[in-house]
Length: 515
Ligand code: UD1
Ligand code: CA
Image (cartoon, rainbow, N blue to C red; front, side):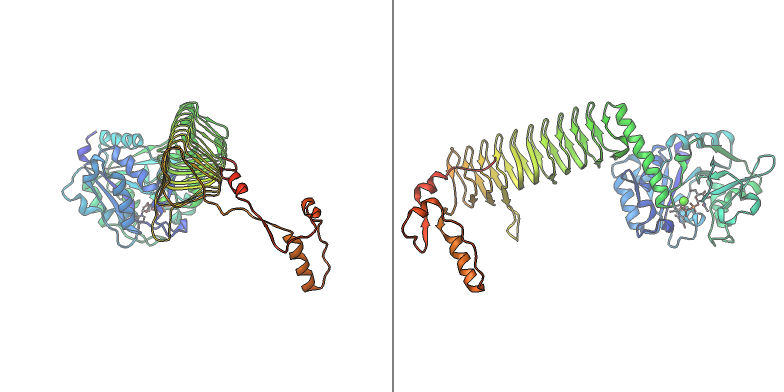
């Protein structure tokens, strides 16, 4: 195809009133991809000599999204973003692109930014037919059982195209027409620009309809070609949230089926939500209610039990995500086990064989091979070595109210339950931190025990005294529990006896609790 004689205009200036949104319609997304980006990608495949995206409503943002998407694309340099300052209809929108086509005398393909399912092969076939037939204007058409919302193709009794009639301008006799205008045209530049200059807004919507150039071409005796598209979904225009949901479901189903063909098991395909850039290795099993978003890459032979949301997460082979995992911008090494109920936040990197258990949150945490944090823990801004065990209820106190600080924990370290690590702080290799310790000072490597704990005291008979003093204040008698056997044996109970021995404190010096 003579791409150097092909230009493309994408209309993306409209607000999309029927979406009832503050956002421009073309920025809404199907399977994570904004409509306008889908159309842009399709257009780029045709490698046009010039490409104009007409922007208006939220124009700067639409331009930013398109430009970011094309950043490293070879056609980026040929793309312009003409402004349509006031949204006065699709014909007016194409006119806004005229200056971008100064000196261009090829054919202009016109696409609407709200038709995201369109395929490049369909456009190529349209352009080929257009060139082969020597037509001035060619357009796609589609037959629908329910043509509501679309412009209709009106033909003469002999089947020759007469014009396109917008739904709101339909004469009663034309209401039965089921052939619709999907809004994809290929037009000779030499005909297009003068025809647009002659458009009038004398219709039900008081807009400059692009569709009127079709009738103009017919009236001027030009060759006008139509090409039927078999797949209605491909050319469906999205005008409402309902339209969006229908396409979303189609797109989702197509992605799930693609990965099933790639050897992935979905226990409930109806509740698997994948975005286009996701990759999944073969023999991976995915349970119900799983969302894999962004650039998430799942390895081979992984198991995702269910109810998980992963965005931009990279999983090695054989990873097991138990029920209820939320992850973003993180890396999980091969054979790691995460969950149930775990939150792996950006910048987390778990090495091979790491175990992260229930109610554990990690953020910017680099965790070494086979290290475990199995229960109720926050690991933020930390580097943890290999073979280390983080006890239940451990917290890295990474934020002092002003700045974030890092915690560094070495290899083969035992962190006892309910430990707080007040960052910045380092715990050296082989250290043993006693349960309930608040680590505020660096712990050297070399297998030392560290414990910070208030010695335990037992105050004998305290409860009985407390109750009787409360009762005497309120005047209510209170049952007093029998004192412990040891106390009963004694003649006299001291007013306040503190039972606390150094031996007892020493006995509990080692770490306690679940690890
Ligand atoms: C349009 C067609 C209709 C066709 C349908 C296919 C016209 C007059 N009607 O109707 O025949 O069946 O698409 O989906 O063309 N836009 C602008 N500036 C504007 C108005 C619209 O850039 O002033 C853009 C919108 O952002 C959108 C596209 O043009 O991407 C189509 O506009 P929309 O208002 O959705 O047209 P429809 O009413 O669907
Ligand atoms: Ca539309």
